[in-house]
Image 1 (cartoon, one colour):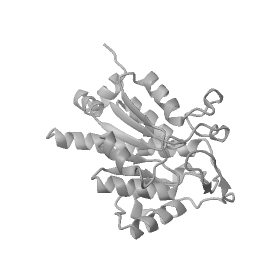
Image 2 (cartoon, one colour):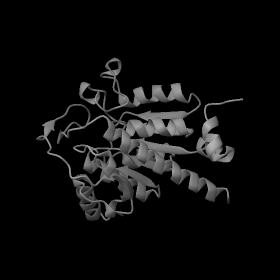
Image 3 (tube, helix red, strand yellow):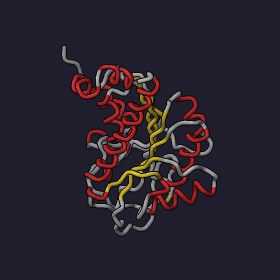
Image 4 (cartoon, helix red, strand yellow):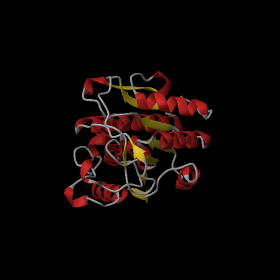
Length: 248
């Protein structure tokens, strides 16, 4: 009988589908990139997902975020995404944390989750660094999205380790911060090697952990493309790890 993952099973085989059902991924940041990562992990049959994001849906998210609808305005992004995943994959074990990742709570959030890998879709550089450093300290594989903002050319999206990225100001600042803190730059990333367009001046943002931040111009398809590529990287890693675990 057909089932939700029948087409995946044709492609990968039943053991691989069972492997994905047994995996637990923690996703930090459920915005433009992270929402598409969450969607694709759920549609691939990842059986356990932890979502972390402090923010709520705002009107400026409408142009690019899968969680953003007029009907979801002012709702927590983790709650909106969790409801969507439950409608896609009712058997998925979901945990949500509406928290702002900081040095004070990163170890607790990652260790208490029991997740076996971390996906970083946070836009704040200091928080990205904390998340990556904490994942490394706990021995968790981490995959990270660099800056999708201020880009327009989908042909320039690339996959590389953090120390091999280029033309990405976010990646450059992240590398500097990780080096300063003695962390490894051996992090798989998705980035664009398109020269970024002009930024708007920093402006205040509200909510937990609110801070002045640079406002980037965005277009509907670029964060989605980053999220799809990043989820593909994560799934390939999990499939390869599953084969090694099973001695295939």
